[in-house]
Image 1 (tube, rainbow, N blue to C red):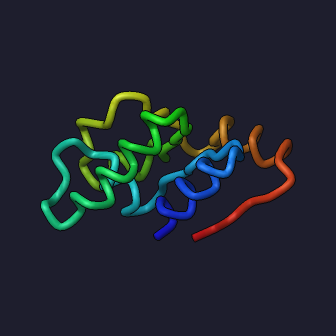
Image 2 (image 1 turned 180 degrees about the vertical axis):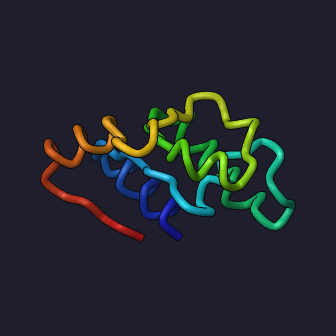
Length: 96
């Protein structure tokens, strides 16, 4: 559902950045489980439309994700400098 909200905001002209952590990183895996295909395709569409996706390095390793979608950025753990910078600059954060 979070990716659908991100796509809706993107369609409304908003700058949207999706952060994937914990098992959410699995939808960015080209080798994801079949059950995550709908979410994976939605994330691909979001990226193809100019969205930005950042994934937690630690979570990627924890869930053995080794074939990320092209365009997904990895934020190094534990300091997460990309996310820290974004959170210090934005006006609105939706957590889903």
